[in-house]
Every structure is written in C-alpha cells, then in structure tokens.
Length: 108
Image (tube, rainbow, N blue to C red; front, side, top):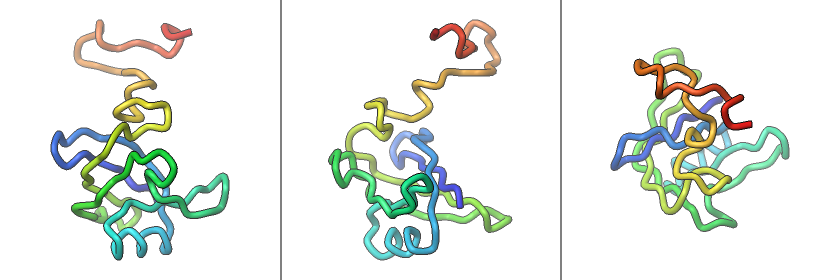
C-alpha cells in the first residue's frame, strides 16, 4: 500500500514509498521506517546504507484503509537524489501563480 511520508517538524511531504504487512509491522515495532521495494521484492529500512534515517513518530491510515501517512523525524535528505524531498526535483506542474509552475520540458 502507498505510504506518504511527512516531516514532523515542517509538515512538508518528503516522499512516497510502498509498504506491505511485513514492512508496516517492522515500522510499528521499531519506529524505524521500513518499506517494500516492488522492483527488488524485498524490505528496505530507510537509511540503512545512506544513514538518512526516518524515526517514525506517528502512523495513520486513511478512511478507505488503503493509504498510510507516516510522520517522521528525518535525518539527512529524504530523496535518493540527495534532495530534501523527493518532490524537489520533479517540479511544480500547477500553481496559483503561473510563474511558479514549470513543465518538465523546462529542465531538459
């Protein structure tokens, strides 16, 4: 199931990752964010190799029971690119101020 990860201090959305029953159970037990890699078919603990860990303060489930929200204390950048958030590199697709929006073609 999708898991949205939010910074506990700033409220900023940091990333989205996938969780299964095992990764959720480990996360609830250890308070260390653990996810399911769909491409590698394995569990991975955030920061296990990079040191950019996520200590989980809170886990909520949405009204349909199909999406999780993790509120975390993030150590280091959340994105594998080194960005603070995985949403930094993608860019804004729609904004109230048209000057803030940019297409992915602008980055090419």
